[in-house]
Image 1 (cartoon, rainbow, N blue to C red):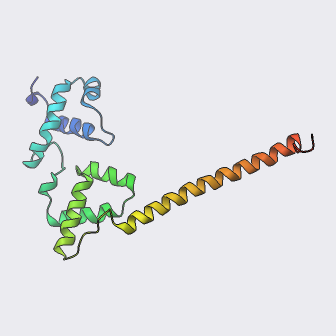
Image 2: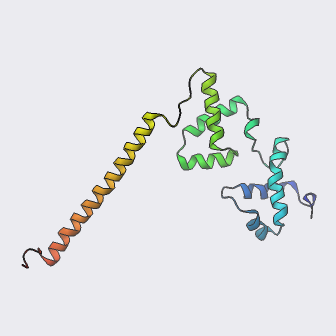
Image 3: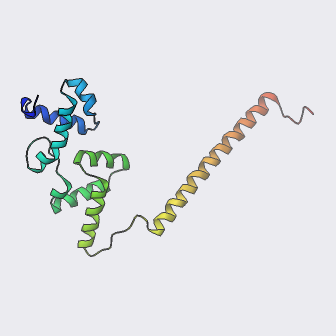
Length: 164
């Protein structure tokens, strides 16, 4: 069966299911809807070409086709999200985190500011200290739990020094 035997709306729905969230594999979707896996995979591959030409198969745009205003809005929206929401946002928009980072650097460059690098020494020091703090908090919690267990054991079985 060729591509032309299916309605555009059906193709759009199938591509959306494969792109998620939650994304389904072409194989799993083929078993569910009865469309050959190769056909579904081709639709997914063709999605980029069709969308770039302004056709159907998704409202997502390729990162290179975004206007400056859209890029700025995406950066601002992305920056205020937590990590999990950022991933969902990127999937919904058909972007990667490197696209947002590149656009951010372009905007800052256009404003005459140097983009802050992730490897900044202060940022690394803060991450290291936060990691140390987390490890120490876990150790303290473990020590407190052991102390509580020791007291309970002494209450149940008595002091081990009394038996000598």
